[in-house]
Structure formats: structure tokens, C-alpha cells
Length: 212
Image (cartoon, rainbow, N blue to C red):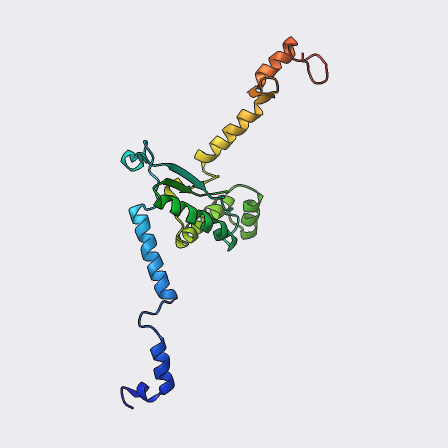
């Protein structure tokens, strides 16, 4: 058989002519995507500098308008993202990229809502401790989000199980718990002031009974 036997098969020759030399396929797409994602990470393309502090780069923020874009936190109560997650994330990513290209200093952030009954139930179903299970799910979601090519500032990512995060949610709860709303002054006041007002009679108790 001749080395050019394909020339003697009209159908094979015609099929070969239809295939571009650099055909765009899944393997080529994967190579292109990963090369660019690696470059974005290495160059800090989506990192938003602060005016001061540990992440401060004053020369990069001077005179630029600021924009904060926060995506809804996914719940790491499953092993990974589902198709509904990118539906919202792609929209905010397009918006954030557009504003970044028009000169804005864009902080596009994302976190993980790690507390709650779904995380506990998933841990029970898999037989793995909730913290171990949740941290593994968060790591997998980070990988998936990176592969989607979304422009989040990974340095600002948080999990609600991080102590540096939930200490503030607990602090907020305590501020609310230890306060009451003064309808006359239209503001929140410490609960101890209400107790004192009940005790000295300057404010009547709801049931009309003495406070002490």
C-alpha cells in the first residue's frame, strides 16, 4: 500500500480536509484555560489593593473609584458545586470585569457558609467529622471556582467557621441581645438603661407592675 493511500480513498481524504490543522477541542481548551488561570494567579490579576495596611498598595488605588462585589456564599454541605452556582457567579464576574476594565478598583469576593444543619447532615451521611468534611468540601469548591476562571480575590476568601469571622457575628448578636430600641429617641440603647428606667419609674413597665 502506498504511503499516500489516503489519496485513493475519496471519503477519507474529504474528511481529513474538513478537520482544521489546529482543531479546537476539549484538550486544547483545557490547556488554554489552565495557562491563563495560572498566569492570572501568578500576576495577581484579580487582587484588589488596599490604600494601606498589609495589602496596601497606595500607588495602585490613588484616584480610582472603588467597587465591592460580593457573591452569595455557597454552602459546603455537599461535595462540590452544582450547575446553579455558576449561573449567578458568571453574571457578577462579567460585571466586575467590566468595571475593572473601566478603571475601578474592584474587590470581587466570595466565602463559604460552613455552619448549619445541612453541613451536619452531610457529615453524618459520609461518616466524617463535620470540620474535616467541611474543609474538604471548601477545598474542592475553591478548585472548581478557579477552573471556572472567576475573578475573585482569593486572599479575601473566608469561611463562616473561621474564628476571625464568627467572633464578629457573635459580637453583633451580643450587641443586639444587650440592647433595646427606644422609640422616642429612634435608636438602640443598652439594655441596662432600660432596666434603670423601669427601676426609677421614668418608663412604665409593660404590665404596669413594679420592676423591683
